[in-house]
Image (tube, rainbow, N blue to C red; front, side, top):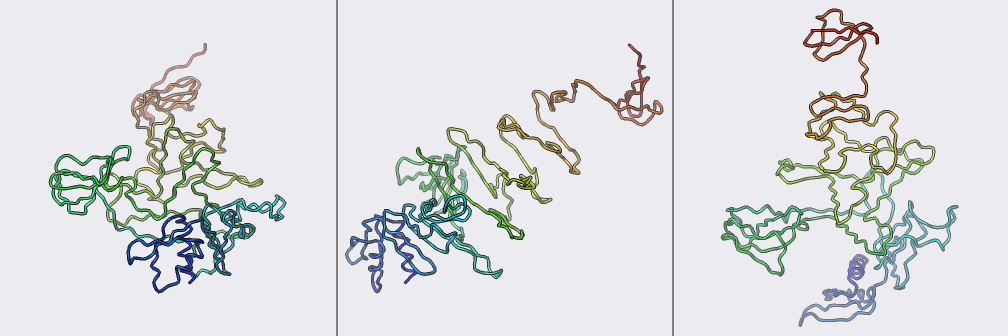
Amino acid sequence: MRVLALALLSLCAFSSATAIAQDLKNSKSDELLRSVCGNTEEKTTSPGGPPTFICNKTPPSFLLTESGLIVDHQLNKPDISLAASYNSPAIAFGLGNRISFCPELSCIRGPSDGTIASSYLDHQRASVLISGSSQLDGIAQEQLLAVIGTVATGRSSSWKPRHSYAVGDNVNRINADNSGAVYRATTAGTTGTVAPPAKRPQSLPFTVRDGSVTWEWINDPAIAVKANLYNEQTVKPGAASTWAQANNVELKPGVIPSFHVNTELDFGNNSGVDCGFSNGNCFNLFMRSGGKNMLTGHLQVDGDPEAGTPYAAYFGIRIAGAKATKIADIITESSGAVGIGVCSSGVTTCSHSTASINDKSTSPVGLKLEGSYSGSAIQSRGFSVDPIGFTRVAGLNMGTGTPSSARSPCNAGDLRFDSNFIYACVAKDTWKRAALSNW
C-alpha cells in the first residue's frame, strides 16, 4: 500500500490540475487518490472506459520517513519538519518548493555562535528532497539517488545523395550553428541529389519526396538525443544569484583520506571505432557558451584556503597518464587576444615563486614555434626574435673563453671573447678572431 501511495502522490504532486487516469477495478486506489489530492472531480473518458480524476486544488506535501508517511495539508505554508536537523533520512514531495530542509554544509539554524533558534529556520527549500546517510559497510556501494539508463534507439546519420534507405531510417541535416532537422523514412528507396530542408517546418505533419524516398520531419537535431538526467534553469528579471547545479563536499575532522572526488566522469569507448576526425565526437566533458552577451569565462578554478593553510591544492589542473592524449595535452583553437595567458586577465596580479612556465620534460624540443607570425616569434621588453630567427636585443652578454686553436671544435655562429679578441666560429670547427682596442 505504501508503494501505491508513493506512486500516486508523485503523480499528484507533479500533475496538479491535470487529469490522472487510473483503472479503479479491484482496488481502493480511488479512495487513496481522493485522500492525496483532496477534492476530485470524476470524469469518464469514454463509455465503459476507466474513470479519470481531476485534482481541483494544489496537492499537499508528503514526507516519507522511517516512521511512515506524513501528509501535510497546510497548502500555503512550508513543511518545516526537516528544517532543523542535518540530512534527516527522508523522501519528501511538496509542489512549489514547500519542503524546507537543512543540509549540513549550508544550513542556517541560528546565529553564528552555533545555537539553534527556530526563527532562523527555513532557508533551504525544495519541491523534491531525498536525504539520508549511508547504512552499510563495504559490502555495497550506496547512493541516495540512482539513475540507470540504457540507450539503443534513435540513431540518425548524415543525409547522403543517391543512397538507399529503409523505412524507419533516420537522417539529419545540421547547419553550422547546430540548427537543422531530423527526418524519418516513411517510404523506402534511393535518395536524389537535393537534400530535404535543414530547418524546422512551419507546420506538421511535414513530408518531402527525395528521389524515391519519402521523409517525414520528426525533430530538431539538438534534442534528438537521449539523456539520463536533464537539468534546465531559466533566469528571469528579479532573480538572485543562481546555480543550475551545486555540489558541496567537505572532509570533516578525523577523516583519513583515501579517494574522494566531488564529481567523477568515466567514459569508455569500446565501440571498435575511434571518435573524432569524421567519426563523430566523444567528450568526457563538453561545455558550450553563447548568447548575445559575453560571459566572464567558460571555466574557473578558485582556491580559498582557510587561514594558516598556504594553498588550497597541489595542482590547479592536472592531466595525468603517459598516454592520456595523442596530439596535445592542451589545445587552444580560438582567436582571442592571447592563446595561453599567465596573469594576463587584468583582473588581478599574481607571482610565481619558481617560474611562470616550467618545462622539465625529456622532449626533443622544449618550445617549438611553427606559426605564421606577423610580428615576432618571441617578444619581451628587452629582446625579440622575428619569424626567420633574427634577434634584436638591448644588450648581449657572451660567455668568455679562448679557443685553443683556429680548428678547435665549434659550430657556425658560436661566439667567444677574452681580454684581447672576439672569436667567431664561421664554419664547422673553424674560428676567426678580431682584435679589441681601447677607446
